[in-house]
Image 1 (cartoon, rainbow, N blue to C red):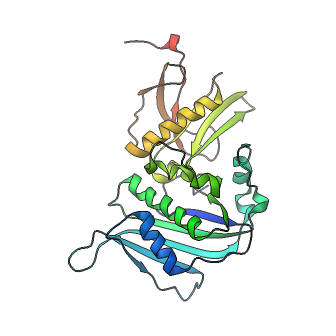
Image 2 (cartoon, rainbow, N blue to C red):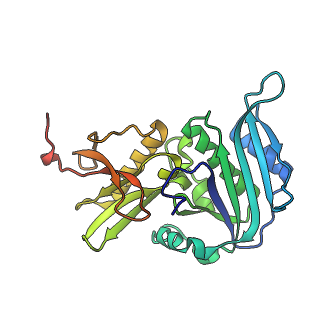
Image 3 (cartoon, one colour):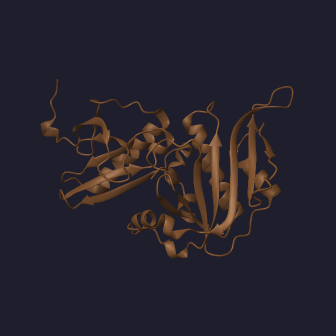
Length: 282
């Protein structure tokens, strides 16, 4: 999919509803947005709606004002809708995510949706850019109590309202990964191998990850990839071919960039398990 296999200059997320949508009031939404982003000098300017599309509202967010009252644009947020949720369009991805038992939301519950798109300034670092997107999603949930979940097309991840609003990381700056990172446990029937990989990092300019379990507990490998993904998110694509990471079994696991084994096809950083007794100490 084009939303998954390459870096995306515009980032999307889709709030989903079981009942017809009541759009948030613009004034309340703007106040909540300014508060959530924590910009003391933030200026929010609502763009005029385009005559060709009366269902779209856009906000330009500015920070770091100068003496003239102008500032640098830090984000443009557009909300389009309401519309009927296109379950067929996302069916395969939603079914894949809901193979995990800990989520109770099903595709059949998703009846209506909004489409939120964000463009952030290159002057911000990656964590700031996508942190703003995470906060925009927080405000949507805050101002739309009937929203039951959010679908993240770039990571093919569907999360419940409760999941997204519950902290899952040691640092608040990783909150974006609650929706933007999808760790998958897959089984390759051709090779009889279990594979753990990620979706979502490619769309934000980082390599996704993959690891063949080779007899290891997939849940432990998934937790390991989750930690590596957080490290890349905070530090960038800093792991080079031939570098090693300490694996879940204490061995040094070498890394190599290559092509993904599972669809969607994309470039990944493959981390190869090596048993501690197989590690060569130089």
